[in-house]
Image (cartoon, rainbow, N blue to C red):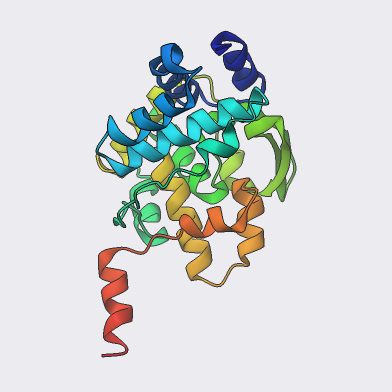
Length: 240
């Protein structure tokens, strides 16, 4: 396996550090068995019980095989994966966001920066690592170098954007700030998912949301639509 070369490919294509670490760790588990497709299939399906873990390993192996032009990928894709159980992910409303990011008289400059940064993430829906790759800012749009080294132009709120300086911290620091401002159960990805849910529930074009988030397929965007248990109960109650 050419794991080091694949790692360079991931880095050049602007994958986040967390994603790269996950990919490399998983590939390392299959290094000794990689010449045997049967062993790969058995390890994916039988070594792990969690459906999410199985799907993650499967997707990582497929990504590597696609990069390596390994024709065995067609054989691997024939395996039947377990269904991932439907769970209610943590999302929040725009009202909750505005309450948590409202600037107060006693806020320090650092606190104001954290709140505005969290608000910026919600208003744009960008990935955490894309904070380091904002290449152009206009009054209505900004350009970002995203996943796969693809440049996309997205909308933003200029009043919020101009209040934050260049992001010079780490994604780990950002994660801590998000929990500090929004609550322990939320992460930078929760903000992205919440933004998508907010737009789709309020009638935004799925294609527009797809472009904003940098998805290649609208199906991926719809997976980000995450109603809470309470929201789904309200919808159910309208019919019964």
